[in-house]
Length: 114
Image (tube, rainbow, N blue to C red; front, side, top):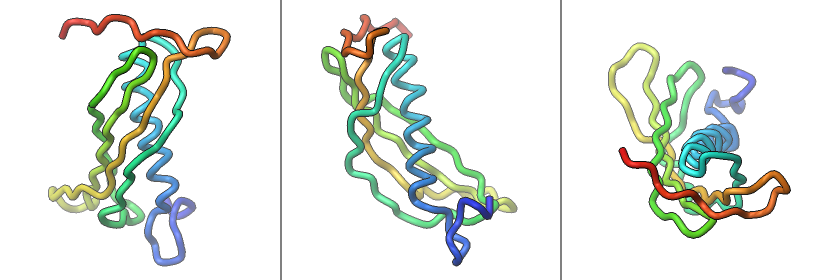
């Protein structure tokens, strides 16, 4: 939307990163079966701009798990409103830690079978 863009009509990189954090947070919460917090964002690359009116799709892949943490690779793809072509515009790695009710790190549960 226009409020999410700079004067040139490009969507703010910070807006894209917030969407990436939301997508990674959903993947983290599913894997942890509960609350998680973002502890690091690494290797974010802004390949191409996103324009006002573009459709944005985000895809996640858990690339590493530890005792309490996980790293999630996120890709963002854009599609112009009147096109079928999609283009990867951003990617990065988000690290999350599973937390308990006291907001302390907790072990990840065993992975669920697919």
